[in-house]
Image (cartoon, rainbow, N blue to C red; front, side, top):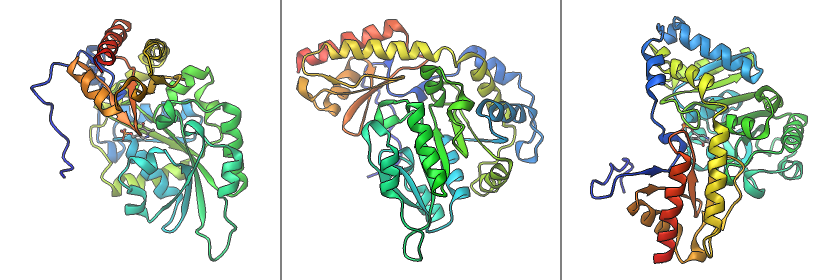
Length: 355
Ligand SMILES: *Cc1c(COP(=O)(O)O)cnc(C)c1O
């Protein structure tokens, strides 16, 4: 097999509704204008005022001392794990966590870090699951260093952690001497859905990052936040891994634009997701998970199609969805309107009727 991504197939009809991922958004003309007029400098030399402005703003938003701009969320996760852990150390995370399922084993390849996968409904786990995974401190057991949570839990179904459960789990981690890290790829979706300020939501996390290329609609970048000491160490790995940038302000300007314009509008994506879920649930045999945010997971097997067959048939109708963990995922975002949700539902009805 080849690991090279597949180019678009020109024989397929054009995509009219792109529910594949919230990473598929294109920068709007206004965002591109903000990027064009950004003040820039050499980011790795500390000379880019727009990158500094973004980091300061994110540290304040997340209630942490400092922040660092990185090219991607994956780099935020691996940098954080590399700062928190040494080779042989163990991380507690949900079995479906992105750091376990979707980063090509970076933590093990680069840091010799082990994963202890926890179970729990919809990508979440509870204090009992943490306690069951805790090992005695001994010369035999791998040293446990970090507890990781994902907000929202992507493969769990875009699920928002009930705040009391999140706080309890993180507190239990601290009590056991573990540091805590949040993969906040879609943290702002959780913030908007729960109506809880970001800093309050992540108060129990020693490190946390937010992706700007998901619902926030920027073309590039993520910001990792934590204590000044943590961010100082994160800079060593940013440099080592080639994540130090030059005129990063061009990208940071898009992120700042997203903070100003693309957070409140996430509520509309959540409404669109609920509309889509309601419409899909009306199809005979379709098993739809009630969405908390912008991700709609469903299992079409009861309607006579595997997840892959459903996705392929939808693509023939111009609607792009993804298949993940044996289900179909449809993702709403700023390039999907309420009218396009209706188009997607029309296509789904036709696909199911033909099955
Ligand atoms: C997308 C995603 C990541 C990785 O972010 P990239 O910016 O694509 O590298 C990490 N965790 C979760 C939960 C994600 O959805």
